[in-house]
Length: 346
Image (cartoon, rainbow, N blue to C red; front, side, top):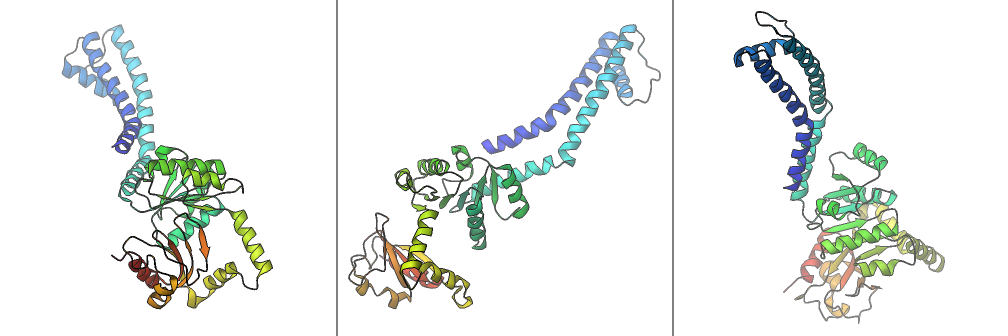
């Protein structure tokens, strides 16, 4: 309702004032001739019309000095207001103001219908790659960016492929407008840690169930983001460090494997998945040996996150699967889907 009122306000602001100005000058002229020239309403209307139409006076003309002065003022003011009204109305239609209002209305309706979508805050280098990957996977995305230059680039590159909000992601109302109450993930990759922290706090305050992924630039701040409620924290410094150490100290590199898998055509359908263990699953309290996940699904179990979000890599056969564990697996969509069914069995 508020969004519709905003559009109506814009419509009234653009068209109501010029039309009202024309109407007022018309009423003033109509009543002025009645009281100054003592004309009947019909003759007053006739004189007013031929004056505004600039077709010249005929059988009815202003006879008094006051009437002539009034006519002069009426012609000048009517001409001025007429030019103003024509300019405003023409700009509204010709310059695309009407199109913009209709586009806003359509966008608002689309936003209201979105559910389980992704909200990306910030269109920097990271945000650009995140957006492209999500669009490539066919996800519904709402991008929030406040920088004018970046917003212009967004409009040029993507247009109708996703919803783009030219706004400040640290504003709670903007997050609500983006449908955060119904969103599945919020990804905050703004320029500073302070902005990302603020967005994380706001997101979790509005929707406690939304999953928040945020980037941390400084190595000493992840704890703050955990306290703020961030579900996944990505630190480029830590990732780079882990890769350097991995390359320097081992003969195989996990990151190189990821790049290798992504570049091989026969492995294009394979990806990493995260599967949560729900209550009722027959996997709960079983060891990985007894669970037989590779035999049942053909998936490779890379590791798992505990309920405390601690990552355990390469689980041992005797490790026990617990409720709310999240298994990190590698396989195709069908195999991951099979494991999700097993993880939810009752």
